[in-house]
Image (cartoon, rainbow, N blue to C red; front, side, top):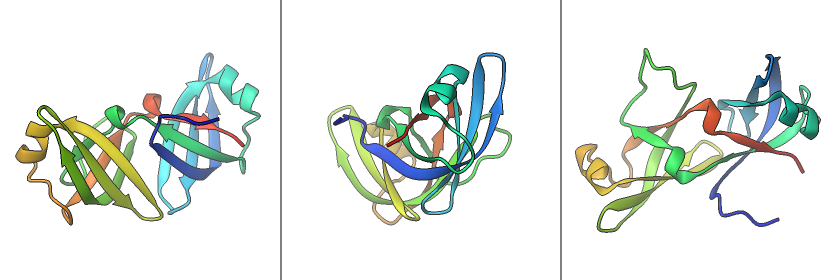
Length: 139
C-alpha cells in the first residue's frame, strides 16, 4: 500500500498501557528516540501489538509543530530533537525537512513561523507531536 504520509518512522514497541477504550503504545525508534502513540484498544488488538512488535509510526506533516528547543510543562509527549536540513516556502506555508538521529521528518508550518523561529538549514529544532496524532502500522 502506498501512502501520502511522508513521515514513516520504523521502531519497536517497548510498552503498552491499555485503558477502557484507548491505549498508549511506547515505541523505540530506529535512531533510539522514544515515541508515544495513543491509539484505540481495538487497534492494538487488531494489529496484534505486544512488546517487541516491529511497527512503523506514521505522522502527517501538518501534525508536527516545531520549537527551537525542548519545552517543559507541556502535555505533548513527543519531543524529537533534530536539525533543519531544508526548507521550501510558498506564499503562506512552508515544508521544513528535519534530520533526526536515524530518520527524517517533514513538518508543514506557516511561512511566518519559519521567519519567527529564524529557521534555516543547520538550525537545531525540536519536533513536537501529540501522541494522538501518531498512527501505527505493522508489516
